[in-house]
Image 1: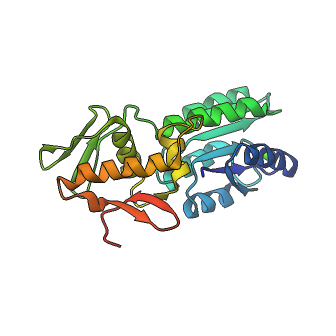
Image 2 (image 1 turned 30 degrees about the vertical axis):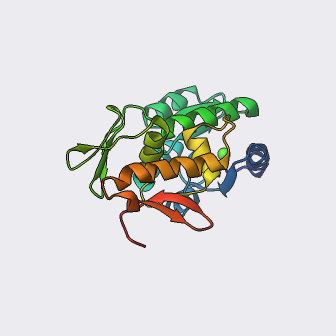
Image 3 (image 1 turned 90 degrees about the vertical axis):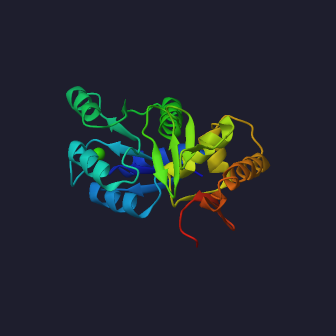
Length: 229
Ligand code: CA
C-alpha cells in the first residue's frame, strides 16, 4: 500500500484530505507542523507528500529544501497546497522542487488524479541514472542489465520490477504495492502474477549466480538487498 504524508495545520482540511485519500486506498500519515513532517519522512516509507504552504513553524520553501535533504529517495514527490492569493509563492515552490501544486479549496478528484500521475512518474523509467549494487548494474535509459560485462536477459516486466526494487534497495513491498508501481493502479493484475514475474527474474539472475539479491520476506513481500539476512 502506498503511503501519503499530509502536512497541514488546519484540522478540518487535514480530516477532509485523510477521508478522501483513505477511500482511494492510500495509507495516510499526518503532521500538523513542518518539523513533525521531517521526523515522519525519516521514520516512514513515504511515497508522496501533500504540503500546506502556510505552516506555523516553518515556511513551505524551507520545508521543501529540508525534505529534499532528509528523504530517501530524495526525489519523493511533493504536492503543494496553496491559497489562491499566493500565486507568486506557487511559482517559487515549483522552482525550488515541488512537483505540483493545487489551490484551495481542494478539488479532490483532481488531487487524486495528480497524485496517481506523480507516483507513476516517480516509480517510472524516466531519464534516470543507472544503479550498481552487489555486482549488478541496471541502466533504465538503455534498458540494459549487466554483470561483469555480461548482459542479463530480462523481459519488460522483469526489467521494471528489478529497476524498481534496486531503486528502493533494502525496502520490501507487498504484492499490491508492486502491482501499483509496475503495472499501474488501474491495472487488473492478479497478485499471483507478481510471484510469477519474481520467479522469472530470479531465474534470469540465477544464470549469473545473483538470484540471492532478490529477497522474499515472509508476511511482507519482496525486496532487493545484498545482505544475506
Ligand atoms: Ca495552514
